[in-house]
Image 1 (cartoon, rainbow, N blue to C red):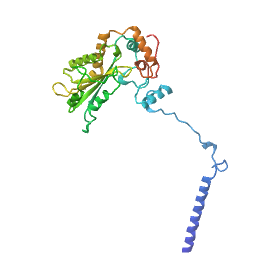
Image 2 (spheres, helix red, strand yellow):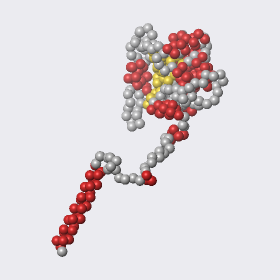
Image 3 (spheres, one colour):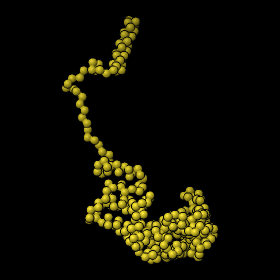
Image 4 (cartoon, rainbow, N blue to C red):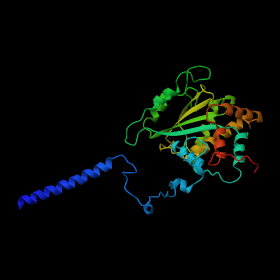
Length: 307
């Protein structure tokens, strides 16, 4: 009886193995109509494609393929210069008067001055000391930047031969200092760019309510003459000098433009036109490009119809 049971078990395993081999053989066999399992007409497989799903951003702002491409391009451009995409600073593309505002900026007779200000701390957040100010001063005093090719000299409120080494020594233990670039559009027409800078710093001292310790150098090695101004980050009482963001971004430039306007007067119409012609041909980003970007809507189109 035991032998019969063993034979029975072997027979069952043999049958299971045979069925498994048949299934594997059918699975790996090339497909053909003869080899396919029979399917009745009532159970035919029918494809029913569903509705295409939109991504969340596109669903919120579905303006077609062009708008989606522009949106993605603006995201991957890191928010850099461009006339389309999300607008910075809460700028709106809706309403009347946008093109009129752009025209007033482009064709206005006011004197334009570019001002950039950067506070620089002397130590990092971890306490590591940053590059010394003397290295930056040495870079500003490099050769070939003066108007007549003479050796570069720093100037300050007292005269045209400032002691920059003494200035950097005074700044050594300060928390920070300010690096400011002042570039009047008509710098070459000013009587004295250094005196212009002194007037600007005197106005800054009045606005900030403290005497300022500073040195500067004028550079003439570019198409736009400019001044590099270094202001010590300490008040006359020894406290840290902190400038408001609005003062750096707006008031300082406004003061510089008023000083240029007071000396040179309003810009003649032919100078305005000449400046625009120069910007059209310039191989760089200009204020003309900026105004076009402001006037354009989110699709990059500008409505030129009369308002």
